[in-house]
Length: 361
Image 1 (spheres, rainbow, N blue to C red):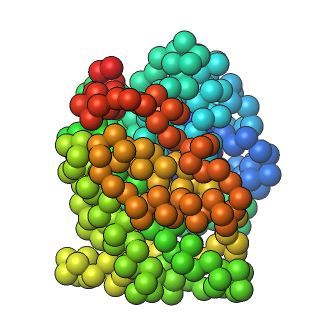
Image 2: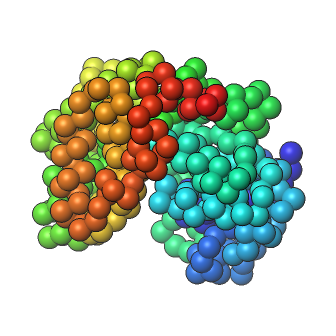
């Protein structure tokens, strides 16, 4: 394994590219638009600092051509927002991409979403997904990435449940954990619990300050923590109904290094998040028209409520946040997101959904 296509030149994609280069892989970096790639072309690589090393990570191919990125690559690492998964999956399916696809992360129901797109095109695929992004990073200048943390212990699953694909994930993204249940990784989408409560309850502050405060350190107040805690309980209960055991949010974040360990152990969710060194300097979004809602509502809370309906587990907090986000941004997140129809699970039973998640139906 030498050639890896990294799709996405946001901070996560740049972190992945720099990390892979530092470990001897040849990287083909793809982005749909040219603007994020210009500086990388001029420098010849990604200027990285932090957990993946300091210096210039030389990238062999920097391209807006998906064909150039993917043809001949031995693995395709998708490091994109869930909002882009449908389009990139359609493009890969249309060109008959054969290399295994790794979604880092998959978000809620990500592998099933991508599989449905491939099925609609009459194609099959081998896909792996991780429960959350394995890098905490920010890109504050073009072609530059500061990686605060390279996470370990993030669960991943594969479809089919195949040792060869699992080994590929373990080689490219070392230190992660193979999930015991095919749906487990879906419920590790911590951002769907982290972001919507802070955005919606902090709406006035975000608008009045244009995001001039630290989202996690300052924005997770007692009220936000209370809503987040109830939302997290819904996530855990829905997972349990399908036979997937997942940790509480504070414990999950402590496992991957994004929460204060002592506060997490004592069950203090707010303190665990506010005390995170990895997230301490991250500013709030400057507006509510932002991926913290556009991604984490339709591709996080919407499928959570869909699975809740199938399992007969009430999700009133998730449903309320969806409705408020729709009013705030004037979008039909429920209708346009990963609902039962989009995932092809309307009318399915709990056991049938679990089988579908594992690629057995």
